[in-house]
Amino acid sequence: MSSNTVPPAAGDLPAPPATLADLGWRSFFADQLEVAERDTALIGRVNAVHRSRLHVIGVGLDVMIPHYATPDGDATEVATTGDWLLLDPDTQLAQRLLRRASLIKRIAPGHGSKLQLIAANIDTLFIVTSCNQDFNVARLERYLTLAHEAEITPVIVLTKSDLAADRAAFRQGAADLLPGLEVVILDARVPQDVAQLVPWCGRGQTVAFVGSSGVGKSTLINTLTGSDRIATQGLREDDAKGRHTTSVRQLHRLPSGGYLMDTPGMRELQLTEVQQGIEDVFSDISDLSRTCRFHDCQHESEPGCAVRAAIAAGEIDEERFQRWKKLVAEDAANTKSLTDRHIKNRSFGRMVKAPKGGKGPKKDRY
Image: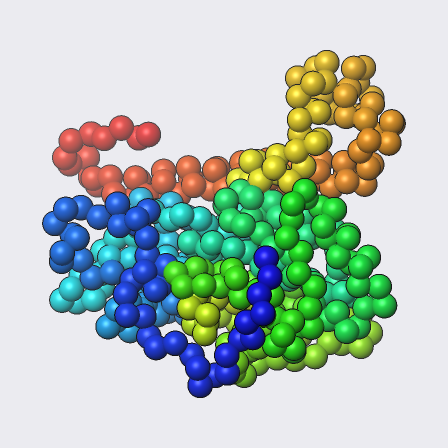
C-alpha cells in the first residue's frame, strides 16, 4: 500500500464519533444483539483499561465504569481495550461483553500462568522494530504468530531508518519471514514517512502497535495524530534499548478516521493457544512434519524424518527449525498450564457455591 497523504496537524483531528461505525462497529457485532436490544441497548467500546475502571466511549457516551467480567470466570471473558460492551441505559454499568472479532493475549510476565489480555477487535497489527540491535527475527516471528492466530493483518514497521547503514538489508530480513508480508521502513519523526501507514487507518478501522520499548511506537503515534500527547524517551546508549513510556493500553483517535491502540513495550512475549498461528508462520516446517514416518516424530534422529532430511538438504534453516520447535513446546506447555488453572478455578467456584451443612439438594462435583 502507499499514500501521499500526510497526517494532518492536531487541529485537524476529527470530531467525536457521530456513529458507532466510526468506532469500528460492523455487522459482526450488530448480529449479536437480540431483537429487543437493537432499539434500546446502550453500546460502548472500551477506550482504555485503568487500574480500577474502564473508560468506555460511544455515540454521546464517555464514562468511567467498573471492570467487567462474565460470570463463568473464564480468563478471556474480561473486558479489555477495544472490546464492545452493552451497558444498562439507566446505570451505565456493563451488562454484556460482545463476542470478539479478534483477541491478542499472552502469558503475563513473571511466575505463574496468568493470562493477560492485550487488545480486542483489532484489524491491523503494526509490529514495530527498529533498524538497530532491536531487530530480532525470533521476536518478530512471535508477533507474527500472535497476529495470525487472531486473524489480524500484520504489517512490519521498521523505524529509525535514519540510523541504518543498510536499510535494504533490514527490509529484506523482515520480508523473508513470510510470503507477501507488508514491510514499511520509515523515520517515525517524518510525517511523509509515517503517511505510509495511513491506508490501514481509515474510518472504522482499528490498528494496534506492538513492539519493544524504545523502538519508536510513541513517536509514531505522535506523528500520526499530529500531537505530542504520548511521552517519549530516548535510547540507552550502551545497548540501544528504550525506556518504557506507555503504561496504559488506550485507543487514540486518528485524523484519518480510524483508531489506534498503543501498548506498553513487551520484552517478554510468552505465547499460548496459538497452534494455528505457528502453523501459518512456519507452514513449511509444519507441513513437512506431517509427512514424517512416525506421527510422534521429534525430528531429532528418528528414521524417515522429513524435517531433518530437508535441513540436511539446505531447504530449511536449522536455526529457524529450532525457533519453531521452541514455540511449539512453549505453546503446548502454556496452554496446558492455563487449562489446568481454569479447571482448578471452576472447581473452586463450584465448591464456594455449594450448599453448606448438608442442606439443600446434592450437586455434582464436576
